[in-house]
Image 1 (cartoon, rainbow, N blue to C red):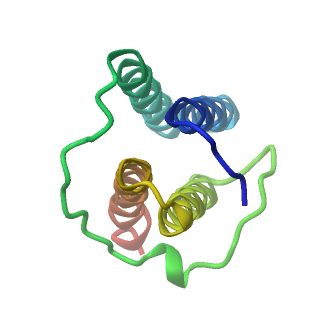
Image 2 (image 1 turned 180 degrees about the horizontal axis):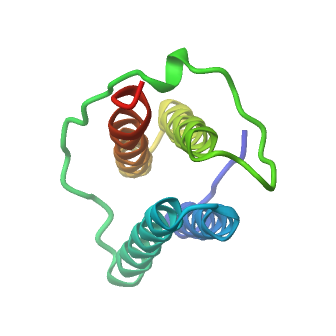
Length: 151
């Protein structure tokens, strides 16, 4: 597990993770076969860009806490088979991949929070975990609307 010595290192790491998410969703958008899925993944990329901008603002302004909010978990990702990244993913598989990615990010930030000794650092990791939980929920809702209701 990566160790951080300063809040700036944490924020730089989180900013890099958000940029990786932007790149991931833009790649999925570029590989999408339908206009709807392309538009959906481009929208997700824009949201990740906003999260990155928020983290940059937090870093610059020194405001480290985000509003705490309970995030619903539909637990759809827990029951789906893992999907490997591939050039021609179906929309369903791309959503599964995205859910699993966000779940992994949530677990990573939660684990970092558990290991943090500084309460400010712990709260920052918990807030980042909460954001990832929101992302996962967004994909679960999309999966529920697009896949489960279609079948």
